[in-house]
Amino acid sequence: MSDIVIAVDKLSKRYLVGHQSASNEPYTALRDVLAREARNFVRKAGDFLAGRQIVQGDEVEEFWALKDVSFEVKRGEILGIIGRNGAGKSTLLKILSRITEPSAGRVVIKGRIASLLEVGTGFHPELTGRENIYLNGAILGMARAEVRRKFDEIVAFAEIEQFLDTPVKRYSSGMYVRLAFAVAAHLEPEILLVDEVLAVGDADFQRKCLGKMESIAAGAGRTILFISHNMTAIANLCQRAAILDQGKLVGLGDAGPAITQYLSSSGDSENRALVWPDRDSAPGNDRARVHRVEIVNGNDRNAPLTTECSLLVIIEHWNMVDGANTLVEIIVRAIDTSIVFHSYSRETSSVTYSVVGLYRTECIIPAGLLNEGVFYLEVYFLNGFTSDWFMVTPACTFSVADTRERSNLGHYGKFVGHVHPRLEWRAALVDEHHARGGAIATSI
Image (cartoon, rainbow, N blue to C red; front, side, top):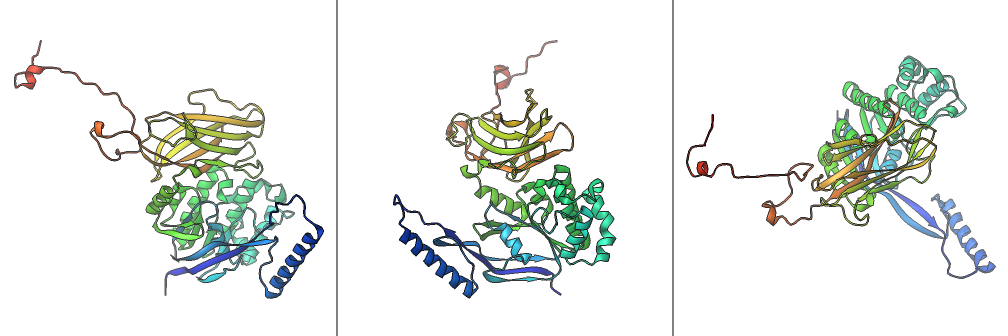
């Protein structure tokens, strides 16, 4: 019997995107509007009769979310799926979950699938947490007896005992995630598909979830497909990783080399800044939410990042409550996910966020510290030193170039290590006589 439980063969997904045509005319005649609407009606009617996607707009553009993707996953394997936003990762999982159909290609799946693709998927907001456990279990194809047998473990893992009989519409986003993951992870699917929903939960729960996924894969031989932007989690949890870029599979192999390939290809200015304009949908919790994370040249924000310039980390966040005891921390990691250094906002200043509002926090990385290479930045928000915290990872991916002339240094190529600080060196002649073969002068 084959150990292959997921076989994806030349999988493609095409969407038709409608655009409203722009007009340079100062006004549009009524006859032009009627003619345009008539053409749209005929096109939509034809699409409806042919069973095709109905697209709004005058102009229709083809968009391939996935294009000729092929790979296999073995039983008991944890496969990480990485790539930029819009690379096709969620589309792939939706096809595997049978939420949407592929435009071309073939998928063969052996076993029962449980999906955790969006926060609260399959939950009814008017029902309580208790009722939604049974409802979600039924949606996942579980018998009532099976749900009842695992009920206490689900509740204990989700840590919602106090709110078990409260309608889930009153749950926070973090409580939604805890309950949704607990149901999916404890109802014994052969295959578990997990999208980047764990980023909503606090850091302690994220570690708990990662440990649970590792245990169910190792202990019960179940298969997990795990989408995440957290390269540390991918490196520690997954044996292999697949890299998607603009709908195409551009890399597949052991997790370590795949992460290196992904971060190397992502180390450009496009990833030096992340912005969340909408406060309610931004990463965070009830105390703080992130607006912007950016890293720029400290001397000229439009200039490249080099070893000879300071780097300025800019963090903007919404403070949600008065008197919040918030700590902002950063961790800079190397391309192999090892930590280069760690710093927090109160280490050298008395930074406080006393009232509700949008705050800007800056951290200066001095020139001559980082070596040439690709790095990525993690940002953490802590409520004092409690467990109420969340992280944004990777907030930025950036590359640092060494532009110095090397010939006068007696060294060519990249220096070894993740940092290359400018250390002070001194030399002095101690004893010329001994250097010429004489005895060292001593005194008693």
